[in-house]
Image (cartoon, rainbow, N blue to C red):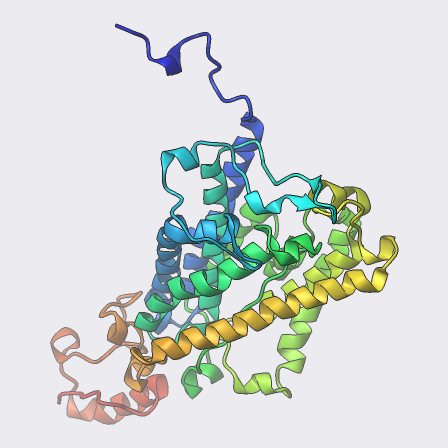
Amino acid sequence: MTTPIAYQEQLPAVPGWLNKGDSAWQMTAATLVGLQSLPGLVILYGGIIKKKWAVNSAFMALYAFAAVLICWVLVCFRMAFGDKLLSFWGKGAPALSQHHLVHQAAVPETAHHHYNGSIETPMNQPFYPMASLVYFQFTFAAIMLILIAGSVLACMNIKAWMAFVPLWLIFSYTVGAFSLWGGGFLYHWGVIDYSGAYWVGPRMKSDRERFPPNNGLLMFARAGLHWMEGCSRDDDGLVCITPGAGVVQSWVARVMGILSGSIPWFTMMILHCPLLLQKSDDTLGVLHTHAVAGLLGGVLARLLAEPVLSNLILPETGSRGAFYGKRRGMQLIKQVVAALFVIGWNVVSTKMILLAIHLFILLRMPEEELMIGDDAVRGEEAYALWGDGEKYDAIKHGHVSSCTHHKESVLSQHLNGPPTDVTIQL
């Protein structure tokens, strides 16, 4: 029997471009990021939310992770990291073929040219397969949508959320990703990374006034998992350092950590109340922990990017932070303009997506579902206890005697607010 070519000894066991260490670390890093989403944020959302929303909140995170994976390999990866369609958007195409996935990873539009057309820096071409790059970038896309879910837990219709996830990934995330990382106009302009978040509809007034976690143990479990994944329990710090990771020195990272722990807290606890933000509803404070921290990190990265490290990563030779060289004002302006572009695009595209969904699906759940929670939305509950967040069922819970009718009414109003289409059989 003839020995297959792949097993013939005279051929190398692996391609010449493959670095096993790079490939192993890329897969490890991607998996650690993925674990922050699943089970990390699924556990967090299931524990930090009120009991009546635990199941639905965890499901929103789980659905986002699964839906993003499907959309990512079908069309979105190449829209973010493929060939250019527009200066801010790539051409959509599947990333599933063996021919595409087993070859060396490459981001074709990242080749940077001088004004005379000669190449200044070649395209990004790391020493691992394209499949590893697809997987790695998927985990970041997935966690972005799951973080957005944190703004709309306990208020957004699950059907609207299921439509929102793929639309936002296609029309919002891929634009920012290509512009900043895939070789778009912001990348070639020398901008360092930044991304933002959004707002959708209010919860019930009673839920906004009192919204305690239902399971502190799950929150501690997620904190421990988060520590093992990123050596940090501070989400703000991770968000803030992300734009500057790889281009700032360690002392700068410590400064960014201190600022990211204080400034987002100040905007959420102090500035949030007197400003118009009080009229909006951000369930888990994602605007402050991620948008504010991300903007802070983007500006600090441009100010404090170290020259030697910058030349290893950024497309323009001689790139450096504003504190290290000439044209200091221009360096900061670039970062602010990039932030405004990403924020503006996200606001407009998100608004258009929500308006389109609203034509067919209610964005906000009906009042009865908001009052009851999981039992009304999904027909199930996180814990087998009757009380807040469950419809009364005489067959399941037994009949209530007339002498306890008054107490039951008072208890129901205390837990669920005024009764709405809920009947207690006597």
